Image 1: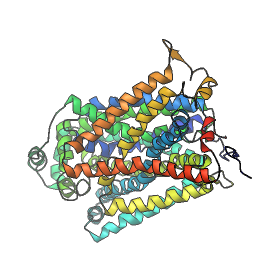
Image 2: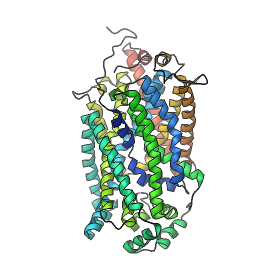
Image 3: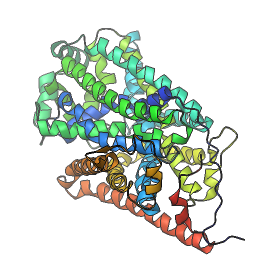
Image 4: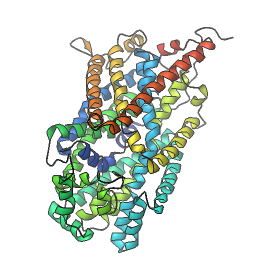
Length: 544
């Protein structure tokens, strides 16, 4: 017979297998670092006058939030991340609200990242192979599959489907396989930057423009620079504020899953070392490599020329996917395509595209790990149905892996055939809204009734004080301010772009904010009917 407030805790079934270097590799690659080749264009569009040589270092504004994850993972070395931390300090409702913003992003992005991997990787690869072999038909095929209006576009979905089948298989096989592909991606990314150095580091704007004109039969100044300058809102050169905004948004957005080692902390060895190395180290690497990528591309193409090419991706009914830039170049002008015009070596662009596709595959395989472990924690606490926390003999939550796979296939279809990117354009805004609450939770952690006991028993580094103020309080305040600032910057393009731009903003924020509270309310009602006080579950550290 069940009594009020009585419940049984079972061991999670998750096994600590991930080494510190594997955790670093995950944080370094899971957010798909090589998307710098696309994000630099989008940041240049949304924040005219952006210069990533200046702006990339703005990513340091997320360090307070990252350090909160590190310290609280050391205090509570269990899977669940921000859900555990905030639910213990502010209450389960706020814990679910905070965590859900990261969870839903991890479910809705794999399909989009698959589309990114195929759409921005395969056409440049076909063009590069065609250029190396003299096969004109391959270039024609690349152009055909890049155009949503062409029947050959179906191959994007076919390739993406195969991509997702194997990436979800890796996810199902468990954290050890995810850790292995993360290490593969780590070295693929490093090798990619070496290849980019050989391509862009040995070129210059004059030779780049000559190669574009010779191969495409256009006049660079008239057909690219002139058209861009005639576009409303276009701006050349460096604008400091816009550079900081672009860096704070796109570099930070590209790093977000780097905190996920905290979410599957229950499967990581040497927690203090692993969390510090993975989360702090990966952000530093992102700042350095984004700056390096910008230096290479601006050196080879020229800042103003790159800004002009970026602007052309906004022109056209199907922009940014198929735009005026796509018509000129044959497909989207990412680094992988522009590489062919920056070097006379016909093989390096082929290698570059292959490395990109490989790294994106690894990222898609790894990204759902955080979401599945978050939902696992909700299930353990009785917020979500208990069957979701079932694990197989490998220690993998197979039901959550299946849900992740279904979401991946569904969102791939949406990404290819709808305005899905616009619909979730502000999904990262809800992530940072979650981090605002995380900051408040960190400030309350040393004092709140539900977390004070955990704090007092935590290792000394977690209880460290500066001038008598707990370091968690200081980091919480800084994280609150920096995250709120990023939310404001994310909202700027929508608030100045009219009702159309406001639609995805309002929809995304409203739906994602309301959902966790509805679920939490239903969970309370359900558990109360069974005479279970679920609040008691949030006064302790969950099982290992």
